[in-house]
Length: 170
Image (cartoon, rainbow, N blue to C red; front, top):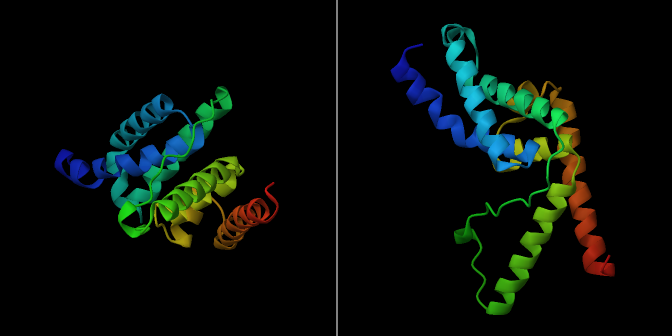
């Protein structure tokens, strides 16, 4: 792989890699280091990239493995999920509706951060990154059925917790 092709194909993935690493480590500095290490590993393996079906999945897998290794070695500090929802799609007409929408979004972010790692990873890749079940299965080394089950359970857990909070204030 030439340097120009690396710049055009691999470097644009750095934001996706960063978000994935950040979800696993919950630490911005570690996530940046992991992305850097991922880029170095991919650059060192650039001659073998032609044989891969999906270079993006390969990069995400390397990033995930590095992040999990770092997380196992060091206890991470909890960091809130940043607001990544496009504000253009949320256009409440009154200040009260705006406040309610902001509070609900904050609650969903908190609940997302409380999910087990395997659920967070699947939701991150599917709902935030927009990956297909097949790509997620390849990245996380799961079957497509396991991906679907984990995604269903993660969404269900968040839905039930929101329902409990709204109905009972728990």
